Amino acid sequence: MMLVRSSHRRSTVGRQLAILGGEPAFKEPVHVGRPNVPDPEGFLNSISDILERRWFTNQGPVVRKFEDRLTAFLGVKHVIAICNGTIALELAERALELSGEVIVPSFTFVATAHSLQWQGIRPVFCDIDPHSHCLDPAKVEQQITERTTAILAVHLWGRPCQVEELEEIASRRGLHLLFDAAHGFGCTYRGRMIGNSGDAEIFSFHATKFFNTFEGGAIATNDDELAQRLRLMKNFGFSGMDRVDHVGTNGKMSEVSAAMGLAGLDSLADFVSSNRINYMAYRRHLAELNGITMLQYDESERCNYQYIVIEVDERDAGLTRDQLLAALRAENVLARRYFWPGCHCMEPYRTLYPEAARALPVTEHVASRVIVLPTGSAVGVEDVEIICGIIRRALEHPGAVAEAVGDAPYGV
Ligand code: T4K
Image 1 (cartoon, rainbow, N blue to C red):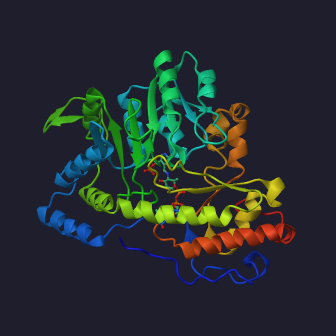
Image 2 (image 1 turned 90 degrees about the vertical axis):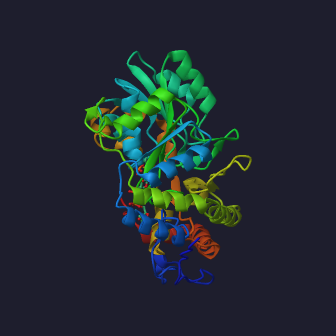
Image 3 (image 1 turned 30 degrees about the vertical axis):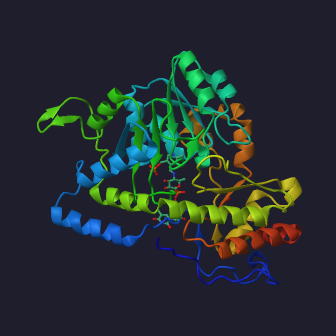
């Protein structure tokens, strides 16, 4: 695997925080979401073959091989490779003929909600569990109306949501069940790979994901009929050269993306390993810090450890989340406040459903506290140590940091 470690870092020991006038700890920005890069050799050879073959897209041999590898890896009957996760969500929703209302978390990337709204389905925002950050099944039940046609749950941060509880509700209430598994590639739920539950599960292989195909996504399903419909729909509905059997769109993955996917599958163990090493380092360095709680992964399951998520409790930390974020940004650590402020506060939802916040107290609470820190194979344990050192020093000087940040904390 090609590792691209951050260079030009400075130790925080004895150094003034940048927000207080010191030099930034990193000369170059340290991002959340730098792509994991597989061993380039296999990928580049594959690109030469693609060029020589002059077959670039439309379910070519590389996409077919990629789908076969994914099917075996996930242990699922069908995997349909798609051009990105958002179109994959839209295709699955459309293939299941969802309409009316669909219950969905607000605490997710906005694409989850947009995929519904884009096709005239109302996303009904439902609250989350404060610990898992995933849909709270009891709240789901409360949001069901006669217009509800499905539940679209998200395995946030790659940690599975309460799959069995949601399956029970969906089957008892006659609803479809989809999982946005954009974060969940390579993770298990009770020992089974994510990708096997509900009507279908949807992955994103965007550049910023644990496993990427530059842009890309996939739909995994054990439903033969649904898989067949999805294959038609992702290719304009064509079932033969001049024959169209279904309404469709262009959801196809290119051969180059699939080649990246095959190379990525070969490097998957390395991606997990560097993420896990960083995760353990963060855990060690953040363990003792007052007011900082780090989200844990269940070590009895397979995890991809792609998101390092902390919650800042202002009362114990002495700093707000945004003040701490400002201190990190001053050091060139471009931490993110995913998924603040929640989809319900973004347009068009804020205008269309102004009352939504009433049902979302946990979402609003969690969204105001969360910071996602850099990891991935572009980040080394030395970087982690420095990032945690910045957090520790900021918490040691809350008054000075708050004063330096002033009334305009990060991004506000
Ligand atoms: N459902 C969920 C739950 C999702 O999280 C997502 C996507 C989807 C559905 C939809 O799947 P896709 O249609 O995207 O396949 C990013 C990603 O664009 C998005 O894919 C992802 N979730 C979301 C969580 O994060 P932004 O707008 O925050 O990303 P951006 O462009 O600011 O990139 C983050 C950082 O990554 C940058 O600061 C720099 C670094 N970066 C990014 C790219 C693209 C690189 O170093 N290299 C790169 O090539 O949304």
